[in-house]
Length: 491
Ligand code: AMP
Image 1: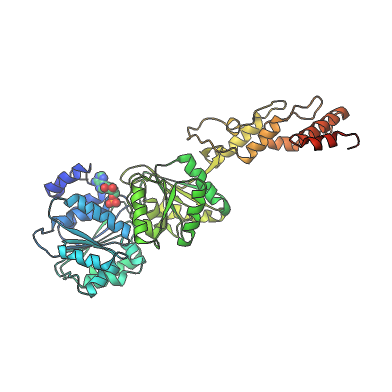
Image 2: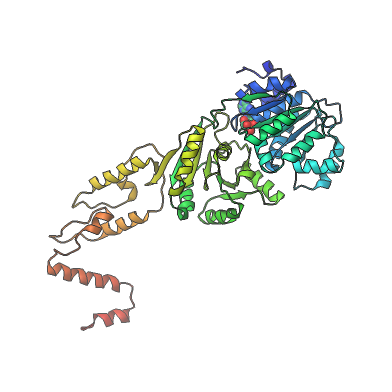
């Protein structure tokens, strides 16, 4: 790997800008792609999510911009508005004060305003294929001077049905333009487009076998479908991440899930493809600013997003295939930072996890929630066994779930409301100890108490006492006239 951006022939001005952003050493994909892109070659670059692909194409592209010219010289095509805005922001950070102008041309925004802004003569445009085609058709754009075109997250651009538009856009340019395709995944249909539109492309593949970041930990929890939301709630309470993205498959489920989780007291908002432009922008801005903890999203909406404080990705629905898994989990564990990818699945969905694990060559560990901790299933079984052993006849515990659980493990502490078993246990422990001769003393195990042969062996006077006490207990809080009535002989 090159030790410095300057050794990659990046202009000093940008090297200093990058240093101001704490970016000093090129990442693997940058070290590999920047030199070939600077040579003017067509490039197909595949590397993990969060590995610095944006700068790998922006830096060579900026190198070639003639800031005195007023024509569009570079085009960046993206699948979504959010990714487009993110790239525009990076461009603006890099080019501030240089005289280089960039503009976004994204569907969903007012086209008339975009046409007006084009009068400022940007040299770089970032946009979605549909909107760019619209503007080309009405001749508000001209790509005759374009030298470089990048398709970022190219697989998703094509998946969203924009392959023809991308090809039409490429057709509107001169033949000597440079084409760069970037993505973490390169499914088969892209190959045909590469053959049609690229000239002897250079393939840059950084650890293609290693498709997810090595700094990611992959976990899954199994529960029934109806318990998924509650499991998610418990996981979030337990880990309490600064920010996490929760994925669902269907946009139809978004409102329902958000409603349930907000009701459960979680700080969550949704970002989904069908929401209005302003609403999406507001949600993204607030999430980036740390105004809420969880972002509920669908695959499309969250593709390519770079939000540095996201430490967890949680799949409430399993992704449809291994490629989607790669893109989802790639929202965390970026650029060497640690991250956790958690899938919440039903017993029937276990096979999906096995499939991803095999396809991606990664270990996805099964975990369980037990006594406010994240444990391995075997560890949970050991807990249970130890608990059984610790339940000694005659011992009266106070029955707290946390006390009953074996200590240690270094896992984050979690103080949940007492689970049902614990509540039952507390009730049992509070009962008075039998006077004498009972088969088993009350103990801190609900199960043991249930199998205890009630009061069968108790002497008759104890049964009488118990009945009297029970009547007394029931009477508590009853109106005086009723108590008097009940205490009358014969009632
Ligand atoms: P990307 O994969 O392009 O979305 O980039 C992921 C994140 O890494 C972004 O926040 C970048 O600012 C950051 N980044 C990109 N290149 C480097 C680098 N060479 N060193 C440190 N951080 C970087």
